[in-house]
Amino acid sequence: MAFAIPTVAAGVYLALFAIALLACAAPLLVLRRDGPARTARNMALAAILILPLTGGLGYTMTDNELRLEDGKLVLHAAHFYEQARPLGDFDLARARAGSLASMPEARLGVRSNGISLPGYAAGRFTGRGGAVFALLTDRSRVVYLPAKNGPSLLISVEQPEAFLAALRHEP
Image (cartoon, rainbow, N blue to C red; front, top):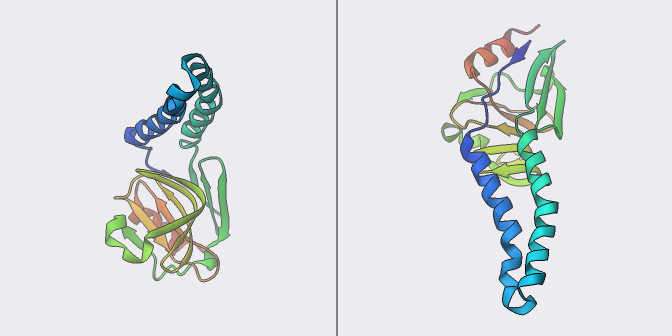
């Protein structure tokens, strides 16, 4: 059974574009020292390296999937990150749905391996209760699944209450 994940907001792509633009323009900081020709060459090299990487990252942010199959929760986030764990790893009695602001125990801490942009987070983070695997595309529709062992999950889901009900009724 698949569950829909909210689409990434346009503001996330604008932030990614601004980061790429600033990185490509960084050689302008040494324009006076290097001269215009060398600075233009360095900007072109930066663009050749940075634009495909940020374009690829922007594309992968749409590659998110959440499924419940054979008593396992399978989560793919940003093409790079995956969790496939049995439901028995989670404390479903303490699982919560709602906005991220209403769940102080589900706050993300330091990113250990992941992507973190304004309005988007995917990967492994530290949290108040230990390690957290997150996929956040919409902070108003979030499900927090505290783990009995391993990282807890923090996921944006189109219908958080229906997702929690499905988890609790899975045999």
